[in-house]
Length: 158
Image (cartoon, rainbow, N blue to C red; front, side, top):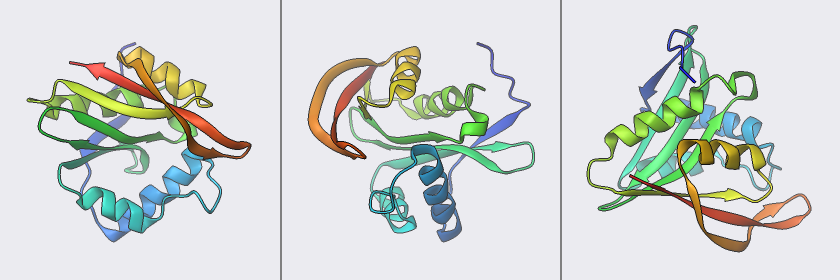
């Protein structure tokens, strides 16, 4: 699929209290989390300020945020912490473009890891289309509305 970059732009994410609040709200919309499980603006602030953290934000033509990616780079690998695209902007190439921008930063790392719920089939399909493959599982990792669900550990090999 060819992405029409005229529909949105991807920029490096610059942290601020306003941005952290916006990310928290978008994350809530994307994942439909209960209040106990939502990531607050303080969580995003801590994640973004951690060593090796990087982020990208996708903006529509009006400058409104429609998606973001937060990740961490270590000496020899990357970790995709969260990838969020608002429902109204899904299937438009936004997630692919966010991931592509992240990959461009990776000079030394040769692998990228992430965890995704076994219940999140659309995300699993997205990650498979990006070249990720399953390398493990964490039992009962996520708290779900029906109890606990496993996390699939996925890896992208550069």
